[in-house]
Image (cartoon, rainbow, N blue to C red):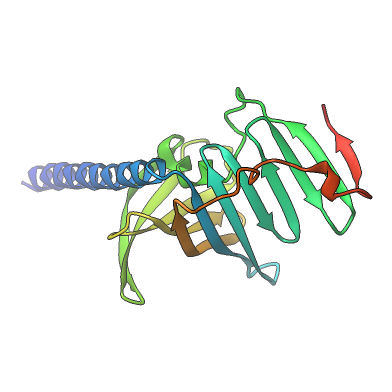
Length: 213
């Protein structure tokens, strides 16, 4: 009798998990479809790094403008421009610019645009808690990296149930480091300059140009 009850419990748990994963997959698919439907996306965000063991607490703000795979990222005093072929990393503090080519065959290369759809491969996922954040329903999905060498223990992806936009992303490292990226502003289909993603060397006359390839 006990054996039958145990088998029944295992089967019910299995069905529940499969349903949960199916719901998580459906929500992630909606997020991906929404992101790809926009002509461009402009995001202001806050980035927090915490590690209680090392007594580290750091907060930074940034913004990124994206169109297809092109982007302009401003973060921690550094500007990165990707025009679709080359990445230009501009460091005003050092008056230095690094130019590098983008390798399309490198699947590990992470760009801001990929950050909105990174979850489509390399993770196991399941529905997590539903929170009320200042009147917004935020559904969290737990992502577990399938690569054993990944230094991240888990990722919690917060999704606005109504808009299907990403609200925040929480990464928990295996060594206790926790990073949180929170979207403060998510704007779409904005009027952009035709030169938005073009690097103009003339704007940096005294900068050292470091060409990696």
